[in-house]
Length: 464
Image 1 (cartoon, rainbow, N blue to C red):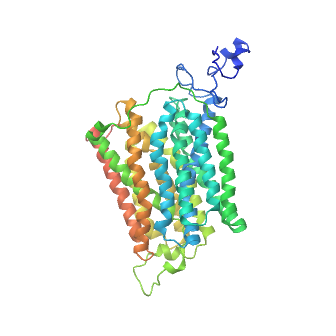
Image 2 (tube, rainbow, N blue to C red; image 1 turned 180 degrees about the vertical axis):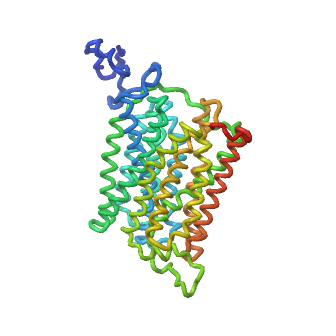
Image 3 (spheres, rainbow, N blue to C red; image 1 turned 120 degrees about the vertical axis):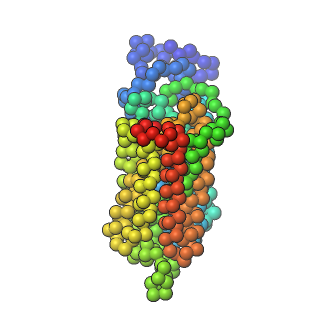
């Protein structure tokens, strides 16, 4: 029976029958002084249940959390094309809004993960979801570039960073043997959000305009955020956090190669997500009679309407759902995460190298979107599990993950603006940016292969 603290609300367990309390999966928890959030347990709850209604409801909460974070991020292509037209701004300028959002998520997420260590999961999740909803409503009112950067880039990005790590840690604590499946279902929330938000834009933009389209997205986000706050229930007690950095990790070759590899991967991976659905304004399309070097990608897209282009983004994000689930299954059952990540990164590079060649027909561009959505989502899903395979002392995993997040945040911040600057410098031709992204991805695959070899040696059949 939970002891009643001074100044707290009366406990249900003070009055109900003991036999009912004994049947609960998780002991009754005291409420905080506010009477809103249940306090985390004070005793170890035992081994993870690895199933049950409560556990799978946490997976649903995690799925919804990815829906409003990575789902919005992978949908930025709809905002990219809209803002270019609305603000008459260069692609590289507009893409800073989206990259600042990812930067805030990864960098703030490194720090906010400590909220779960301190037993403040519910408070962090509430603060994060409020900022996301508020930022989305403010975006609907924005008409200037700086307003969009503050509302969508910084406010929503900050909310995502506060929400992401604490919201992810709770479902993971309920599983052991089924953890790869649970994490895959959670990660597929990015694909779900990446389908819903662009579909809303496609249907609503021509009917109600930009403002009410974004407000409609904000109401959907509000509903999802309410569900997240209602569903999440902390299972494990608060614990002492480790150090912010483990500098000794940078003396280990596998870790160094891994950090460089995923920096290069994330430097390139969001370029296609942001730019594949753009309908460039006609003034950037150079006549084939005056410039034989023009990239036919921009020329082909000049015949796409903005709404048609959203179909490309829907396909890319839709294939991201199986793209996030299948690699986890293959890694856990057959190859290991790092062995799976290397050929996956090579596949992404090959698809990017093929991008300029498929722009002659709309159907081939749809095929590119499907393939890219599949393989690009796969490499993202293997990020965290690959690092775990390189970490001997799992007590250091959180610290080392935070360090990689901080480095990768700068890759996400600068990658798409660099690609946009290349497009702008090339007079609207995408060829240079496409080659840059593909080469960066291929170099990333090479460094991941180096991490694997430095970890295991030249042993082929080694699961890692």
